[in-house]
Length: 328
Image (cartoon, rainbow, N blue to C red; front, side):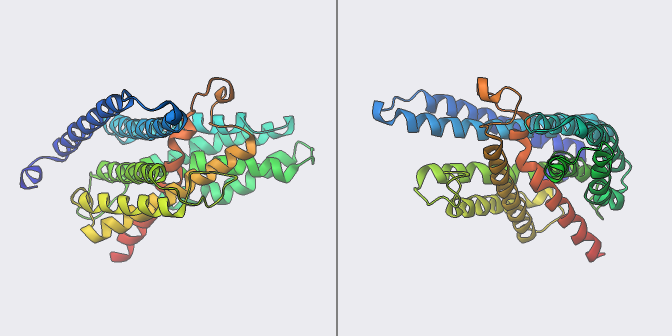
């Protein structure tokens, strides 16, 4: 701890990356060795399912770590542009798998080429008050107006609700991740990268713990028709694991250990429920994974990787901002 405090902010982040990627490499090697173990033939299907789930969560951690590294290397402006590209691709995945009509093109053009870039411009310029209401207020009103001008009332509410839901998750939710890099906190200036790292780390720990607990226990699913693997027992194990990870990582945040644990618990809990909601949306769309060819190739789309962050990031950002504003 004392040695880390003597380093500059950039050196501290670099040290975190060395530890982070070193641990991920070790876990990945262990996963490969674990997969080489022989299993009885009668247990092959269950074994393959558990292996696939663990690989999915490990890949999510790798994506989060690489995303954080790219955001840090590119600086605040580059990070904002990077997350903007991810929002565009995720929103595109979401829309292409849902039923839209020709009359929706005006609303989609408005969402993709006006609201999305404007949201990230507000992030980059730190207009957080307007950034917080642009999509849920102005976007919510503007998109159906654009669709109504196309003069097609067929399933109007359903079509616009899909567009509004997609832009809320893929753009509004994810845009809060780069906003953490630019958040001004007294005596914590220039250290927003640590908050983003903290968020990614605790959410990933919670997801992995939940998946492991689900595989070990035969807990009753909360909603069997949506997900046979989501149970409240596994959810509680996941969020408390995230809280423990948050308490251990408190020294990279402006929080005390107890405060960091609470923040991690809230973020991981919201992220886990977010993944559950996205699973419900996939069931409704009749697909197993987001992505244009997921039903044919079994490939996992970008939205599957970032869905948890899309729900966790806005709750975490506004909780942190509100807390330090009230404290001052």
